[in-house]
Length: 194
Length: 194
Image 1 (cartoon, chains in turn cyan, red):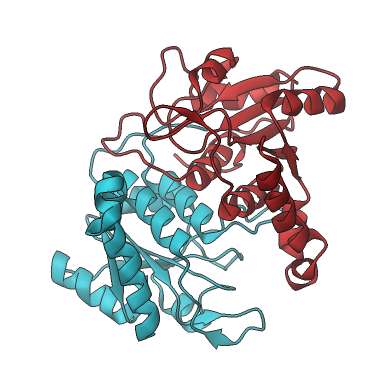
Image 2: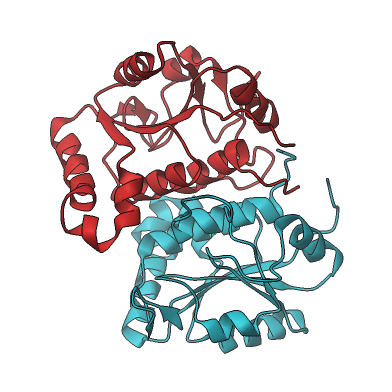
């Protein structure tokens, strides 16, 4: 199905509040491959912005160093396509800052879509969300977790919870980089594939 | 569309023969995130095997060390799902070894599908390949490139060349990890999404 209206989708990668292996709330560390891979996919699928939620100052500085290497430093000349992808990345301290920034840009509150590898009751499927983000004429933001997943209170506060990528599969342990790429393709990809 | 027959798909990640930035044929270095992310996606989508093509002995040893850390070393106990994903990885010196191994396992020559971010004449689309791998009852192998893409002679020798993921997009610079994940989802994912 081809739908004409351009979707207005944002992506946020949460490093807090996140569960660790033992179900404790922690701040996870930055992974440079997350920044690169998700930014490149986001740019490929015309995502409106990619936020990295990181409350720890030293880790925020690390993100900024990685990004500026490719946007202003040596990498900018060496690999200009990487520069173009990383230009859409913003580093913010919390989810509120993501919402505030989108509100400022769009003059309207975005709809929040949380994601998880587990099955949640009443979750939305890809086809329905694909239609909604085109028909609603609203900004949407997809929350991606790190570590062992997004804290329950954030999941509960979302407008929608997206179905796991392979909810029926016996094994479903994709990296956040893979999951992000597949989610963007399912929601924003142009090709009728199945 | 649901097709009942189980597809028999293999994945191979080529580090040789690969183009570098200046269109010279080189061997690219191993990236541990490629091994992890592609193995996890391959396991999630029930891929029959994941080959890493690496002719350089020292780099082959590095791959083996990464894998054995997670399959036999500390990582095996710490993260058993990682162990399960990495069990399907084989490291081989060249593409011939991939074909030979599949021939030995399947008693038949696999069909070779090359991939590239650029558009090739006569390339196959995702829907057609998705049907073929179910209807043909043959093993298929998807060749993924590193660096600046797979050498022309390998592209020319393939049975099929798969369409780029976003052939029409103005920007199409996905990481091989993202591309691999999206390709597996388009060919093997169960959900009707578009």
